Image (cartoon, rainbow, N blue to C red):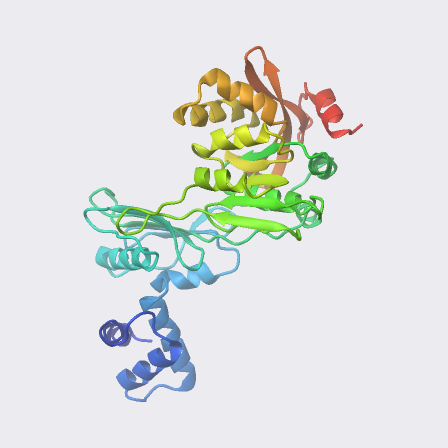
Length: 378
């Protein structure tokens, strides 16, 4: 559909149709503005373009709809990037100018009940369709209006499917199965996009069907194949800046809901204090994900999060030593996303460390015996 027609329909929708328009309303306006000269196929194409422009992500909508898309990134009007699981690539999409990017960012933020303007020049919020939006406006952004859209798809791959895809090399599938069956507390770690959530979801599907799983997440990504799942989701503040519900709130509520396993989708703040405390009060088999570059960096990361939340360094290490047993570390490389290490959490004096108990590359495994004892593996 020609750009002037899109613009005319967009203006009429904005002025005449309250709320999100239906496709029938859009189709009627398209036919009126085109003078009835478009065929059915052209009308359908025009309707999709107009709905995307008014209620979707505009020119970015086709990128978001493509199978495999995980991220769409915009750096000003002329630089749009997309990640389909193999790294960033330049998309053949542009905006007319930075004002168009800003209008899209403001509209998407408003659809989630958040403001984005000169007084509040950035926003981080989940959109109604589950996509995660982060936007920054100039002059805070020196590169024009910047958008980051993360497509959150519920992870429903099983362990067998991950193994078939090469994500579980060597004995890792056997060890991970034993980890869940033994109800050891663990963290799945790695960088962004390494498949932490996908693996955690698959592992939770191995839990005993009689167990009650309490999931605390920012967005509904975990989707374990399990009959008894209770999901708690965070909530951002409203336009007045009140009403926020954070992960720490969810963890505290979950503890009052008789969990057999307490799961935190991503440990990244003060909720680490409540999670460690919970795992030290009889809640075996708890787990979560954590962003770190190496398994050995987990104690330092926990220490940083715990001390920022008011817990002393010695207390963080003591709680971690008593609460956590194993770290499952993933990495993304040319061969794809895969488990590269299983580390054992153990004390060294007053502190804790993560020592390798199994490695995909066959490197040194000083804690191999401890891991075998923990999981009952030979």
